[in-house]
Amino acid sequence: MKSTRTFNPRLAIEAARSGELTGEALRRTIQIATEFGNTDAATELQLCVVHSSSFAGDAAPAEILERMGRRLSALKAMGHKLSPTVPMLKKRGVIKFLNEIANNPNSSDDFERLRAAGFEQLTAEAIVLDHPDLFGEEAMALSRKRLGR
Image (cartoon, rainbow, N blue to C red; front, side):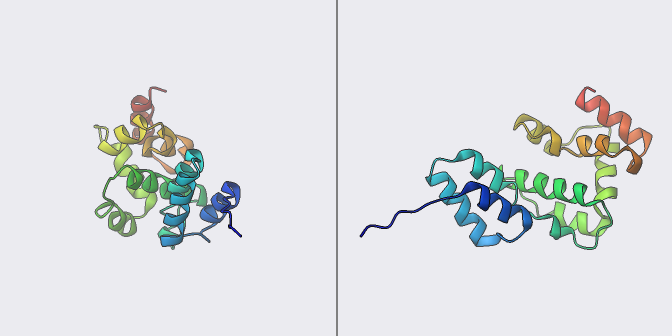
C-alpha cells in the first residue's frame, strides 16, 4: 500500500510561531510546504526561523520581540547574514538597537530590503512608530519621514 504525505499548514505555522517547531525540523517543514506548492505557508514559516525567545531576558514588550524575530527571519530568508546583528541585539537590547537604527539620518540596507520585499511592518521604523511611548521624538520623526507617514 502506498502511503500519502499530508501537510497541514495551519498546524505547522502555529507550531513554528509558538517555538515548538525549530531548527532542522522547521527547515524540513519549509521544504515540505514548498514541495506541496504552498508558498504562502513556506513564506510564513520562514518568518519563524528566528524565534522571539532568542532575545530571552530582554525587557522589550513581547510584540516587539516577536516582530524582531520575524524581521531577522525575513532578512535571513533573503540571504542576509545575521552574524553582526544578533550579538549587537544581545549586547544593547532590542529597544536601544531599534532606537539607534531609527535615529540614524540615513536609511539602512535592511530597511530597503524589507520594504522592497513587502515587509515594511518589520522595519525598525514601523516598529518605532507603533510604540511611540518607547522611543524619542527624533526617532519618531525620522521614522515617519522614511516611511512617508
